[in-house]
Length: 268
Image 1 (spheres, helix red, strand yellow):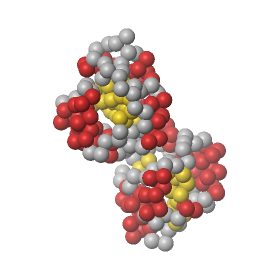
Image 2 (cartoon, one colour; image 1 turned 120 degrees about the vertical axis):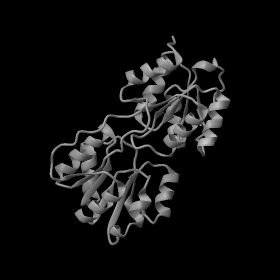
Image 3 (cartoon, helix red, strand yellow; image 1 turned 90 degrees about the vertical axis):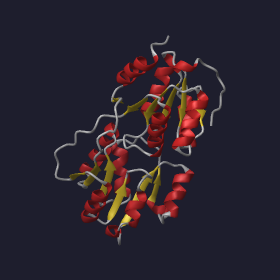
Image 4 (spheres, helix red, strand yellow; image 1 turned 30 degrees about the vertical axis):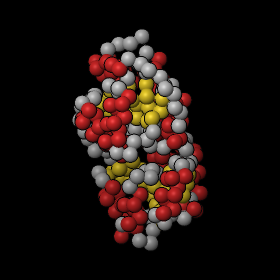
């Protein structure tokens, strides 16, 4: 990962958690506004992209909330912006705990929820367990576009017995190894970096002979999956988000800036 040692006044250091395309935008915009920005991500690829966005340093991926709290203290970080996936993952949870412990403001950037079209082929569900049961009822070739988190729930579920699971994940060797360790065959691992167009999604779903698509409500990026599935007359199981925890939830870049200025003052 990119390592650049730069010193800045303590009272304005920001850490951005990378995990979405918007994270890179926020790093660039905050940096251009005079705020020095550090970044961290769970993967080497994410760290590289975060560095390209203008972060002065990309910190090693933390192993725990305590590890991240130590980095916050050592680096003099005064505010954390969480721009990871709309479904909070390990990095997001670590950061929330670390910020609470260190009494550092925590801002959660989150895409607005998707307004799903009215269609009998769309099945909104409230949990992973419900998604598994509904998908199992709808078809045998189940195409998962939910990422690498919680794959084990599908693999271990008795509802999936006799079903073919196809998973689309990032082309990161650790993620691919995780899939293989869970028993996925190479033919059932689609390792690709998005975003994907409706046309591309449609071609992939057809190529793998999908009977049902399972996805998460990840905001605007879900639209092309739904459009592709509906064009093919395929059912789509959409896992809805839980209500966001805590305060300081921002859905636009301007809301992030307003909160940053509230805590750190205006720069530039």
